[in-house]
Amino acid sequence: CVEQYSTDVAEIDNIFVHLTNVAIQKQAEDYNEQHGGKWAISDLMLFTESTRGKAASDKLASDMEQLIVHTLKAVQNVIVNDKHSFEMYGFDVLIDKDLRPWLLEVNASPSMTTTTEDDRLLKLRLINDALNIAISEKRAPPEGPDEELVLGDFACIFDEKTKHEKRPPPPPREERSSSRGHRRSTSFSRS
Image (cartoon, rainbow, N blue to C red):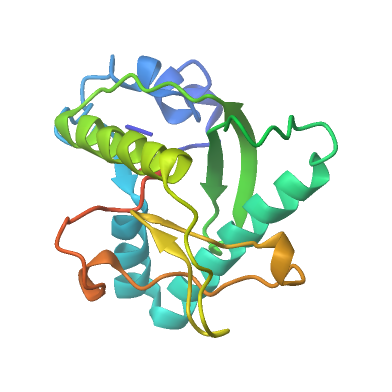
């Protein structure tokens, strides 16, 4: 949000203090066109680690991954499962002051419209990584339980073939050996 949320009755008509999408927020006088109120998930994790510590950042990442896994498991019987196609989902997550993630909504085929240069680059990387996964040849699974399956900026957080074991989150992009400089293709709103 552009402005801090308030429960003050005098602010009830101020549309910028409520949880609203970018289409509304970008009309605000204080809208930041540089970042558009969005952070890459790696920036969110870095901010959380710097303000709350590594354990809190790791727990938040794990809690968000579990929220996504449980959400998809809840609807797995109604999701079209066609090995010749794929679907991209956008998860809108609110993180409260206690770093608890709350699912707001899931968007099937989320919008690829961009509002800032950073947003454009993030979504281009997302599209690139999604297509690389969709058209990639079959890859060998990780050799050991501590090895993770990573492709582009995606990490396997749930694998039905490994007895539903969750893989640990990947290290920040800077720690991986790749020089492509991707960020995890997820964005969060700043409040």
